[in-house]
Structure formats: structure tokens, C-alpha cells
Length: 97
Image (cartoon, rainbow, N blue to C red; front, side, top):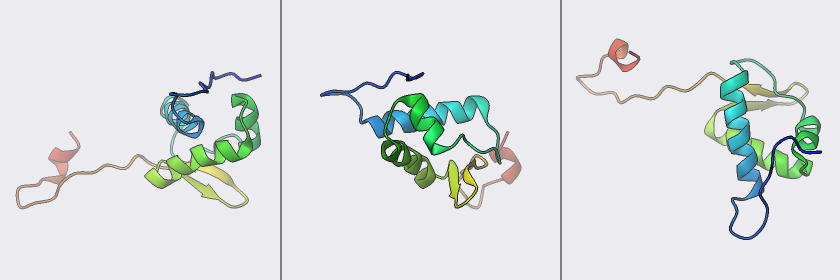
């Protein structure tokens, strides 16, 4: 039985994208950098989706740099990326206040 409701059907957001959005929220609420996510099989079962669909959702987070997939280890949460523009007036300390 699924814990999270996945919308299916015409006009709904693709399932893998819903998974990516859900995982992103779960990570921000419950995980810190270096933490491992549950196995893909466990997450797929929890969400009531095919493992390949879950992998595609995780791939979305891998491509944006939120998580890293390590062979034999699993999917690990990465530090949040901070971006700021650099120019002659930039000050590192001011960028992160």
C-alpha cells in the first residue's frame, strides 16, 4: 500500500516527477548531508510504483545535484549548493547572510 498518493491519468504531472518532488521535500525535512536514503526497492514499495519509475525520479535529483548514487552504498544526500554571482563588487561574507 502506498503511503504517498501518486496522481495518474491524463493531465497529471508525470509519476517520476511527482516522486522527485516528494523526495526533495522528504530530504529537506528529514535528511542531512551524508545521510543515505532507503533502498530503491523500499521506496518503490512505499510509493506503490515500479522500481524503474522510482529510479527515474531519483535521476532527477542526481542531475540537479541534490543526491549522489554510489554503487554498493546507495543514494546519499549531498550538501546544498549555494550559488552567487561573482563580480568586482562581490563579497563572500555578504552572499551568505
